[in-house]
Image (tube, rainbow, N blue to C red; front, side):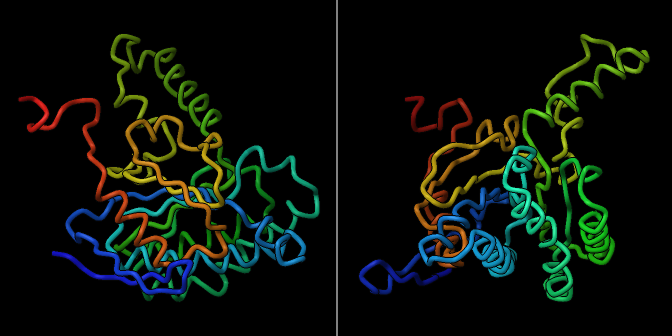
Length: 262
């Protein structure tokens, strides 16, 4: 079954976007990039871009949920982002409380459940409270999971997972030769969104084409779409267009499709 969505192109013309409702990616991960440059283009402080970017999370969350996405993972703050100016970091740490205060009722209305992965114990207490309150308030929702990667880094995640496995081996709970991909999967932070641990589609906004220490294990066979649009300008129509690109890809997971074997 196909649904039609509409997008306005650079010439201000309306274009039709057809989506196959049976091929909606279960898990979409987004690197929300370009907030600072969006603000600078408008001669605004960088934090204005972050504020607008967080507002846009609301629109994209509802759009993804309405399309039937099961998990939407958003790279909100990386383990490397602490290197930014103190004033900017402080602003970013305040955003979750402002965001969830206004958005949790809408999340519940849309049956969206909040999940957070990352080193949340290193966040300021106020930020931790906002995050865990949102998780508690939406815990009975059974629709899409809105999964924030907050103080998250892919390499750190793998190191933490390897330590967990090593402890099990050390405590004779696991033999070394029993370690396999499933063992590693269970040790990673995305185990909390099982069975949709691995994103089907990664989207990065702002024109940059790298994964920036995000979901290093999980992106092994993800389709990737890079768009020039800055995150605060990224619309539900852009999301539909990127899903359409995903639906046109030939996913072989290292093998061959039947037609290729002849």
